[in-house]
Image 1: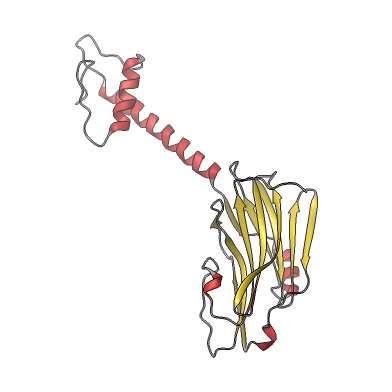
Image 2 (image 1 turned 30 degrees about the vertical axis):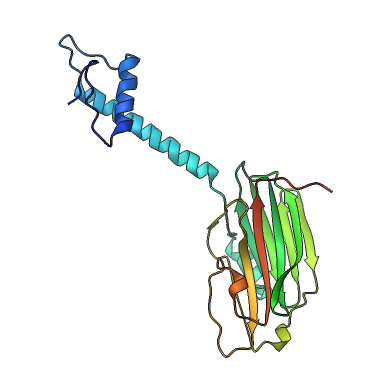
Length: 231
């Protein structure tokens, strides 16, 4: 039952509808009749409308604040052309929000029993959407940043890791939408070699540094809330 101005019938666990009702009472949106009673049908409808608007606003805010990276979608004709590269190249679409200020794409290489960061490219973010491409082989890596003005290529032609000593080579890369968390490294593409008789299959989002291997290349993305110095 909903009581008049002097009553408080708020049941536990429904604070939001109760607050909406009090708001409507205070601002005269709903008023009691001459007997001091309220039209329950009208109040229920208005509460439902208020809750619906609140839910839609919350969903809209969540959608606007989502940041992610995923494989780019292309027409079938474009996919046929890309297949000529024998799975050496992958395009990724990225969505940022206003909290993202800069990005860094790093090349990690495994040699002498350790992973080393052999190169990185970084820049400030001036678009809420972007696209990058990675071309990865056993001997080198090319990175492309792409926007409406064209593209910029960064090359790492020689990667010092002993794939030639591996008896098996395998790899994994992002094949779905992956959320971006500020200042958290995301592996985009990992390729490892091993001298063992078997190779454990891992997800690309796992920490590649834990892989048992004798050779390896990894490409990672890190989005930061701090701008990088322009040089």
